[in-house]
Image (cartoon, helix red, strand yellow):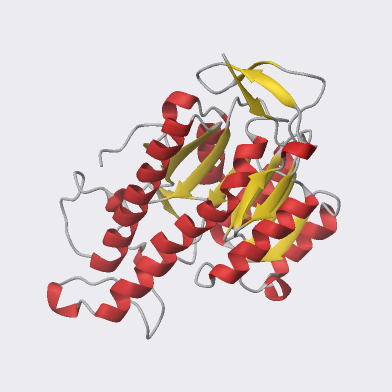
Length: 303
């Protein structure tokens, strides 16, 4: 057996959030790193848990916020987006869930806003139990279009897709990690905190039979590798957090709308259906799921 500090409060030292021994109680933990017995002190514990949805102003992200609030009558949700003042759908939800929904600015292309968001969550809640990285880009009129042939590949498109779809989520994980470690599964029915990064089947190298979409495919493949890397690290450290990747299927959102013409009948999902299926996977995540890549139906996807 060994001893570790219960994280009641995080303090910032040299740019990183650390446990303050003066504000923590000692508890006994097993070699596996999870509590076997403890004193009367406990980790930050919000009944129903605290969830963060990054990229929450519309589409799948917005639907995650709605279902998390409606399905969990006591849980709190932190919803982030680039322009909170213009996120009218989020503001409408705030009117219905004023005590449990916290909206804040976070731009995945600006690390300062990510760090500020983490600080704000730390001050308000002290911990997180779920992080959903839902942001992503596939096309922007006049700026970014999925490439059907090699001669249409442009450096600017590759870099933009990589920055938003891969770099952004990993930086959010970096800054939210101490909060997730502090929260674990406390206040929820899970034994661990969960990081769920929205990927796509087209990011699978083994599943790639069609080619094309170079920027989007490569950025999602990069997200998969970065997430897998983090899952290996946290596994070594015995942190009470698991990282999973999720493919929602083809969902009727602004992202997919220009490309829905060839979607087979019955394979274009509503936001409500897709998020319901993904939340089922998240809510049932176990330690042994760490580092896995799941489709909306719970089936594992090859790398």
